[in-house]
Amino acid sequence: MPKKHTYVLGLNTYDHDVSACLLRDGAIAFAIGKERLTREKHATGFYKEVIDYCLDAEGITLADVDLVVRNCYIMPVPDMEERLTYQDMPGFLPPPEREQAEQHPYFRSVSDKVVSISHHLAHAYSAFAASPFEEGAVMIVDGVGSYRADAMEKLPEDDAGSPLARESESYYRFSGTELQCLKKVWLEPSRGMLNEEFYGMRGLGALYSRASTYVFGDWNKCGELMGLAPYGRREQFRPLLEFEGGELRVPGWDASFKQPYLIGFGDWEKHSAMRHWEDLAWRVQDDTEKVLLARTRWLRETTGAKNLCIAGGVALNCVANGRIAREGGFENVWIQPAAGDDGIAIGCAYYGWLEILKQRRTYVMEHAYTGRIYGEHEIVNALQKPLVRIQINTVRSDDICGDTAKLLADQKVIGWFQGPSEFGPRALGNRSLLADPRRAEMKDILNSRVKHRQAFRPFAPIVLAERMKEIFEGEEDSPFMLIAKPVRPEWRDKIPGIVHVDGTARVQTVREATNPKLYRVLKEFDRLTGVPVLINTSFNVKGEPIVETPQDAMICFLTTGIDHLVLHDTLVSKGPMHRIVAPIVKVFTDVGAVVAQSTQAAP
Image (tube, rainbow, N blue to C red; front, side):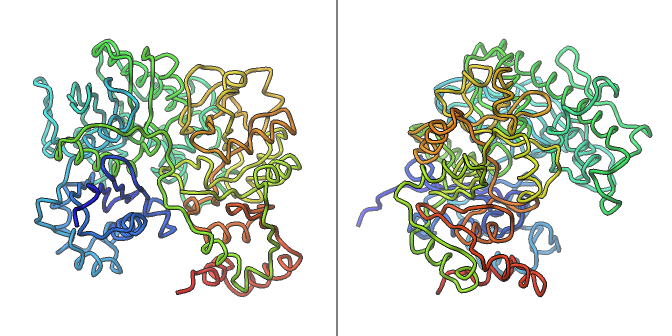
């Protein structure tokens, strides 16, 4: 029987945000990050879980995959796997996964069906290959990429640097399937106590991670640093990035930076260094925006292109993205929804499809709903376990969107679980917590009862796409919640729950064609309240990944202050026994673990 489809599998491996993307005839069939399956945020290690997820969802086996393309930013995957055979590196291959890896056909594979590519090349393919543009420019900026010695694209003739320099910024021109590298900015080797202390290197993304480490004790909290920046005072620090004549210089830090957050040394929110941290956050954000704008304008002048595609970890900075879209000179800006390293899997897959298999571009990533759909039997299973059933009441709704809108208008917090999960770090309406933006205190309610995160952090709005310009400034669309926009003054008092301290909001526009249920909820809420906007935040608590399965959603619902849970067309509420059962379970054991055990699917 002839093979029906051509499958290409892209993988981001070993370091943070392990992920997989399966292409079916050049279109994304499924994509998933490992953290959603293991419940470990930014999960590292081997990639069996994400491969199995994609293949099982498609109903195929490893034998059906025509090509596998992989990346690991630390070093080429073959070199990484060779080292893992003789060196104990639990951060990249923990002991429980070592035997799993050694038995897997992709581990240390010598097959010509399994290839590896360099980091920014993968980011670049993730940025343009699924974009809506036939031609344009590409901007990749992140913390650290491949060594110069391992970069695979043809470099400009005037490019120079140490073979041990690392990728920091990469700029390209594309037309159809052709990609040309115009400029690379390298991180030269630097002294550090750790070999891979990239946040001590002098680069655009590395500086942001250095500041994140200084303020939060974690290099990967750049989004929180961005949210803190508007609280800072202007010009309290000297510039930390100097940009002149197209050259970037990052001055070293000195003893004036002597108030780092030390994990375990008191409450972060009550720390005496808070003003210092706020001022530093402002400085880093302002410097980053200025450099990115200068780079964008140079790229526009150099290429003459009308369209810009962006990826890399810095592309998750929605405040900078907003300025790039409004002030950078390009007519259209498209940002890959999984712009960080989880999106590397998309780029690897498309490199295989376009460059190795020499196929055409036919797919546009209009949405990020790339997970599998959970069946009604899986919903029922999550609802029927004994420890769950005695705590809840369930109602099957004939109008779940209308019923949800009424609850939202009544100030209830809703856990909203629909269809396939979103790929990337943003909840885009299928694994979301929804709430009414008309009350300023809703932000505090969500933070205290559900999210358990710092009070300064803003919540994002979803808005009917056709009403976006009425409420937010700027013409640019924002379907992936990656562009911050000023809220129009006449709307700020109407929707204070989503307005940040600087008068902006990280907007997601919603269209009926890409998410009909969420669109209907917004339409019904608008009919009831006159407001076509809702708070949309990720369905999780601080420190945990966004929920993936009905079981994950049930655990989060029962262990937080979420008022109601919507699983497809089923409305779940907490019954009287929840007040009795939940505290007892919590006294004797971890309630999440008990609920998780009780909600495991039956064999």
